[in-house]
Image 1 (cartoon, each protein chain N blue to C red):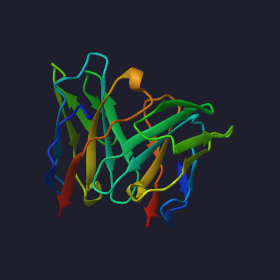
Image 2 (image 1 turned 120 degrees about the vertical axis):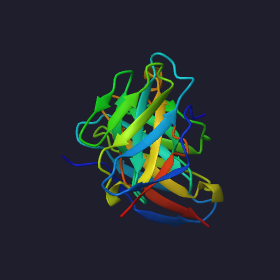
Image 3 (image 1 turned 45 degrees about the vertical axis):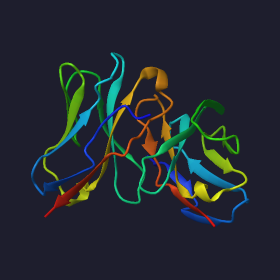
Image 4 (image 1 turned 135 degrees about the horizontal axis):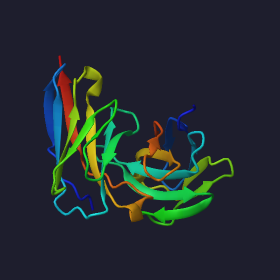
Length: 111
Length: 111
């Protein structure tokens, strides 16, 4: 059984640029959630996708958007990057909505 | 908007049981108690969850008080690899699309 994978591992972007982060769900999981974790804090929920539709959203602006594909892989897109967007971005997959299984994260640095 | 209170940090001796407390005095009748942990530079890992009965799995035991206002996660024989941030999360079925992480408890297992 393949776990949740994310790419890239690390990324450096300049303020104002756009970034796309990718996530492959664990086999058999049809739901993916994205979280942002600033240094020293717990993860904060961004949004969730279920069967290619957004299924809930946290307190993040519209420049944070996502996609889920028929194979249940997912993308997180962030436009007009700000310095405060520097964080670890985590995706988590699930099938029942109970246990969420997290990937290792993508470390984004905005300069 | 975390609904739980945990100590900021605690130390534990290797080989001994680690008892991690969590207060959730405003928990509702249909809300579950979840525990996740995050080892440095990794994504959070699901440990266990429960509603009102005590639960045990291969990783830990969860003891929930009768009034459900607090719980304790027990790592029966702590190892150095159990050093991590432990998050106690209260989650309602209607919120099944997100986990609300607080600051967690930083547990350091010492040899």
